[in-house]
Length: 476
Image (tube, rainbow, N blue to C red):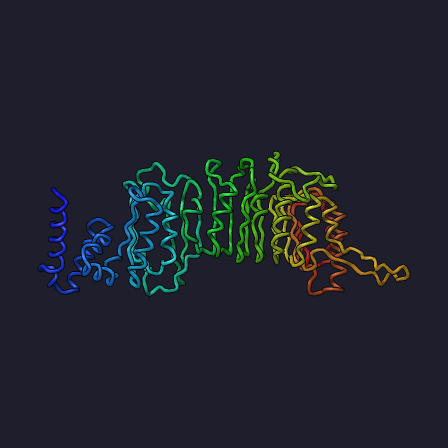
C-alpha cells in the first residue's frame, strides 16, 4: 500500500472519530467507553486515545476516570518506563482514587515500583499483584480518598529468597501489609538484595527494619548507605545481620545524613565500623549494639584514622578485632554527629578501654548505660569515678579542689555477665560517684543500678554497695 493510501486511511479514521456517529454520543457515554477500553484492553490505551484526534484528546485529558487503572508489566517494560507511566497516570487521575495492577517478572523490581506509588497511598483503591501463576489481590479497605491522613510508617525488608518453591504459597510470601485504625500503614517485603538507590523514589517511611537471612543475602555497607539515602524521614532504623564480613572496600562509602533518626539498632554484624562511620545522625538518642563481638579477626579498614593505634591499656579481650571496629565506628559517629545520646545499650558488644574513655568523655547527655557480656576491666569501671581537677593555684586548699565527672547525667547503670572487672573496683567507683553526685548534683545522680551474673562481684561487695545505695541497687 502506498504512502498516499496510508494517509487517506488515517484521514478517514479521524473523520469517523470526529464527524461520524460516535461524535453524537453523550459525553458521559464516551467517557465510559474510554474507561472500559482502558480496563479491558492494552493498559496503555489512554496513550493511544489521546493521539486519535483533538476531541478525543480533550475528553481523555479532562476525564480522570480514564486513568484510574495503573497497570504495570515488568515483563515488557523497563523500570524507567514504569516510573514515567506511574507518574503520568497518577497525575492524570487526580483527584480520584486509582487501582493498581502489577505483573512481576522479577520480584526485585517490586520495591522500586512501590516507591513510585507510595506518596499517593491515600488514593489507592485496589491492588493486584501477579508473579508467575501466583496472585495477591486486595481491596485495601480504607485506602481511599476519605483516608487523607494515611501514613506509610514502617517497612520491614527481609533479605531472602522472595518466593519459595512451595506452589501453594502466594504473593503474600514476599509482600504483606497492615493498617491500624489510626491510619498507620506497615509493610513487609522480601527481596534477595536491596534495590539500587538509583531505581527508587524517596521512601517516606519513618521506621525501617532490615534483616538478613543468610550470608548469601548479606548487604554491603555502600549499598546499605545508598539505600538509606532514599529514606530521609527515618526516625528508627534496625539492621539485623548474619555476621557476614564484607569484601575490602577500595574507597570510602558515602556519608549519609538522617536528620530525624533518634533510634539505631545494629545486631550481629561485621560491618559496624563502615555503617557507624558513615552516618550523620544529629538527633540520635538511643543506640543499641547487639551481638557485635566476634572471636575472629576482621579485615583492616580501608583507611587508617586517628585512634586506630593499639590500646595502651592492654586489657584482656575475647573479641579484640570487633572491639576495635566498634570503637572506631563510635568515634566517627559521635565526632561527626555530636548526637544528644541518652541511651546506650551494648549487648555482647564491646570496645577497647580507650574507646570507652573517648565515648564517655563525649556523651554528656547519656542517662542510661547497659552492657551485657563485656570484657571491660577495672580501668573502664574507674572511668565512672569523679576526676579531681587541680586549680593551678599552688596556695589553694584541698577543699577548693573541683571535680570532673564523665557521663554527668547518668541515672541508670546495668551490668550483666561482665566477667573481668573486680567487685572491689565497682564498689569503689559507684560509692565514690554517688557520694559526690548525691551532694553536688542530686537531680542527676544514679537512681537505678542493676548487677547480674558478674562473677567477681561477690556477696560482700553487694553488702557494701547496699549500705550506700539501699533501694537503688538490684543484684540478680
